[in-house]
Image (cartoon, rainbow, N blue to C red):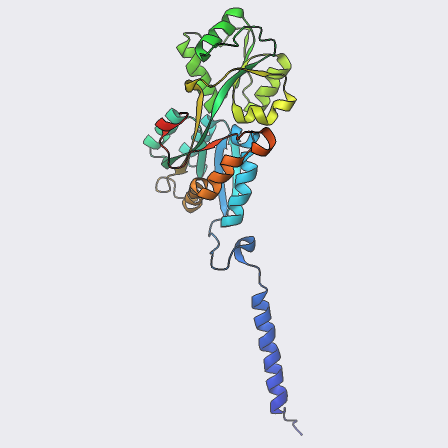
Length: 299
């Protein structure tokens, strides 16, 4: 004899199944690791950022990148290199977005059509540092060109990055203005390395070097080097963000690049830049500049 299922029992079973299904939907993880459910996860999550070593060595990327990833769901892969190398990655379509600090070189990359939407993000400044006893006697000077002339004239050690970075580019421009060719002299040494490592070499050998203020302040406690010249208008250090041209390089993550650029210029990130370093060094390491004109900086 076939046993008939009671209507009430069948209804109860259906109710329990429906409840379990609804419960499973309610506890499903939100896309983007905790984003609001109405924020769609990006189709292409990996984003390659080519940037200068100063943004890494100063610790700024350690603050900005996690905030960006949490907000958007993208996963940033930073390539911390000299600006020259970062721009080269961009020209080859081997990065998605650039954060760099060599304005003249940046403009050339845009003119070639490799990058688009170049926008001002922030600035700080370069400083000339050297041994506390200042053997070349450059303290008190107000011109980097004159300081380099004194260092060269005295034959005192100058340590250069020698890596075609933004810092190296501006250093070379000062030597050119001084009508000097330092390469090949015993007192001039190139590390071919980033700013952090170059600072360590200069400190160990007690030489002079040109550095961005942010990296110097971040590593100052481990260095035996003092600021010997600063606050010259020519020492302004300006950072721009640029998206790699998706029309020229179809494989780049152009949506991610735009999202990162937009984030850097957002009020949220600009406030982060404004406050970065204040608690630890008593002063910000960078000045936020979104929406400003370059001509107004440093005034």
